[in-house]
Length: 270
Image 1 (cartoon, rainbow, N blue to C red):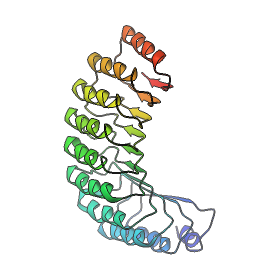
Image 2: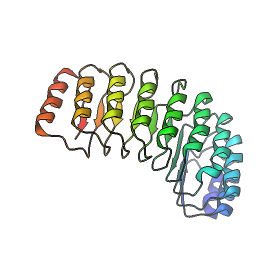
Image 3: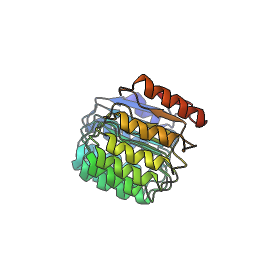
Image 4: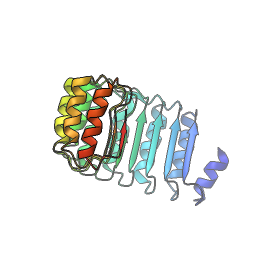
């Protein structure tokens, strides 16, 4: 690790991405100190690290001054809801970070409120990935409300967050007015037909969403029916994922018939 830090301090132009695994706060501090002067690293990934308060504080302080880092990933790092507020606050100051992933970190509904406040004012973040957390319906609605006014976020991942029909309703209301979101991943949740009815209705008016991932939810035949109807009207969606749902052959034919009308869609995963 000392050699890597030395390269960061010397602004090695070949070192664009750094992926660190299973480190603790002491090493986090060394890395972040070097990033205060580094002008070449673009991507920083923490995987299965034991990051505590001092580590998060070091990252926050670095993001206040670093002008080049564009993507940061926290994957299974135990940063949890206790420390999330400290991190998201810095996004009000940082103007270069474009992609933020906080996956498998027990982010909850309260954290969603903090993230939503950032989305209301941040104008540089293009991608937010909250896969495998615990934001549930309330957190989903709060983030969706923020995206009604956000004008920059293009990719949102809420895969595996225990989202049900009321969360889907919040997403649908957002899709009716949002003009920038291009990819939405809500796979692996608990969204049923009621929620899909709402999303399908939103797709009839949404003009910007290109990719919608709905696989491994609880969508049944009536929900599929509404999606098929929406696809006959929507002219912008290019990819849709329904993998993991039981779709009868007769329904597959109806989907094929809808695709004869919809010429924009080129990928439909069943």
